[in-house]
Image (cartoon, rainbow, N blue to C red; front, top):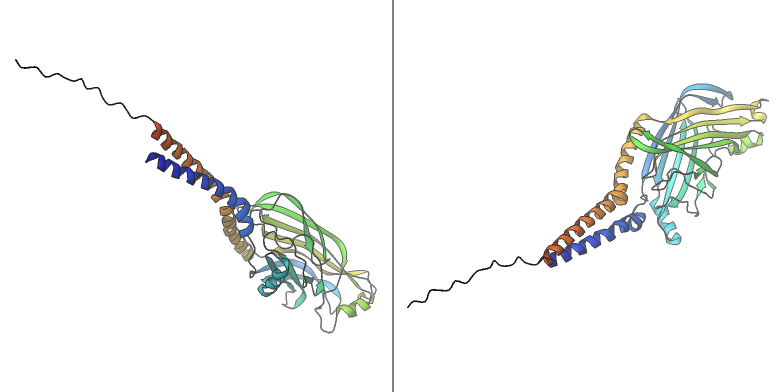
Length: 330
């Protein structure tokens, strides 16, 4: 009976030991992915910013500029692309909407971002665009890969339509969460005018005819939770200028927007709570379950060996009993 039990325990120990690396290196990379229908929004603010008044074409100080960013998963588009791509694909239709203190639009920048649901690598397909212009992305955008590494990544900049390194700057703690801090600097670069301008009757084409150009620079910062690859906080030191042309009335340049854009406090709290929850799920697959199965396998193996050793031990000898001869009666 003991031998049978030890064999069962041995089989369970082998099963646990084999399942442990299988969960981490086979199941997790195939199960962990971004949902195709995910929706999220984010509100950022720039206090005491500088904004261009298109009525006077002069820059002025304003108490606040608000940036609303939305990411909406397009399930229909992802299903269509998956049929030819042969892998799980996510299509995000995003919009960055900037408004002044009066609630009026300053600018808006729509994007379609297509990427691998598991690795977050870009997938090049019809529809990949920024402000309606076709683009071909290199590197990541919005989200880092699961199990983010301590290294630089290529990060796509929507304004310049190019990718540039975003540098790993060290490990920090943000609101009780261990994060990797990344920073990217985009130098002054000539960029396109948005398709939709903030003043009626003015178009990107009409502004271009005046000879005026638009320039942009930013310092982009992200605090990324490395297990999920999700940023828990982000900010930009953002500057835009209009330069040259008859639109400026002989001036060399004028500030179109300048501000330190930061996530609003209520969205920081929500994001941190969401990332903490998702982090637990990822760790369950990559750490808690694999290590737990290994420990359980070791315990079952020890118990199996113990029972096997007990089963092989010889039984104790029976006590000697001296035979007593009965007296013979005469």
